[in-house]
Image (cartoon, rainbow, N blue to C red; front, side, top):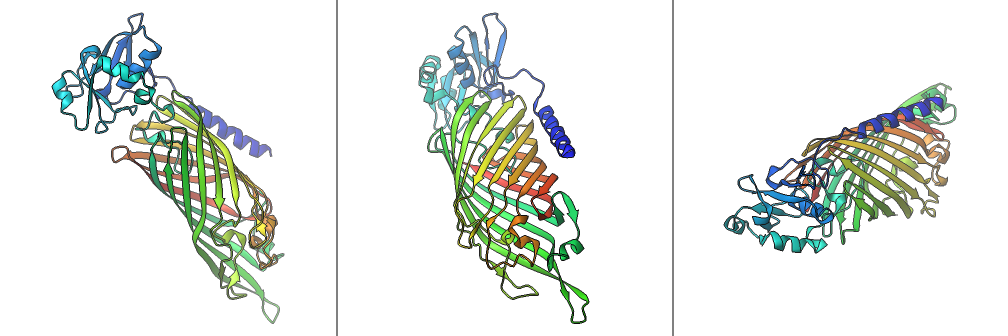
Length: 458
């Protein structure tokens, strides 16, 4: 226990050190680094000190709450020269996305402004009047850095962000997990010890999970998410059988299962949002469409029922409830997500998996707007299986024993996110290793996990 506490304390210390960054001078309104000078704006405060903004919308939203600023200037989009804001012309056009998402650009003369395709042209006073309508110029703070790669959490996190009203995103994620050897509790156990109680000892297992996701926001407050899972599992095992002469004989074999897994439907609801920070609730339900009666041939029997770990779905309607908190400051972003999955009833094979509690902590550093690096800690706690599948022989293999499921696992991940295709396509990758494992019984030892995926926003 002392070792476990030391590991967790050290990881939390490293995490906190990572996310606490030095402050730099940035946009006076949203604190973002000013990277695109074509949208830069400036003003003087009541002490005649210079204030800089990364977008016209930040200048005006700042002015709404601080009317004492004066001498406002905006950047002419064509010449990148600062001009008097009160004499400039402004265009709202989705052809020119501005850093904070209001699609505003400025021009020193009306002729240039009229050349912008699909643009709505205004002078300064008309623009201020438009901003009195919050739907025109207000920016949803939880999406305020949407042009940076770290706007998304590491690729292994789902349900980490909301979209503005009408937002739509497709995603494809791939998880590859490898397990080798066995543990009992947190201690390694060898095959000979397993053969004292079972005929078969698992050797290694690979699991590939493919997740196709769709997200849509019917409002700024709510984003809906549907995930369809596809799984492929392979396990290598060694059976020890007794020969007629009383001598043991070992035989290696492999079992496989693959196909459609369960569907999960989630709703994300924003409960708080401010400059650079946000919080939302996560709620979801698991729809049990994945098969739970897969079989394969073994040396003992053809079409043998596969153990619980080799099935493709849970077989039960499970509910998930939790919350996500995110923040950013300058080039640093961070997040905390805690989710609780509660299993209900029993499936058609008369069992249900244990409840799952999951906590993720992550921090990311924006190297450049299009590239970020991340660190993540994930802790999970899962209960034992309740009930049992009558077709499984608990004396055959440890994975057929319900008491051998569940436990506590702490993993660490390192990853990257990239933003391409005019910031519409995000590609992420992660690699993770277990830092601590304490299983309820005999379980396979997790070796490594790789996550990869792409997210396309419309």
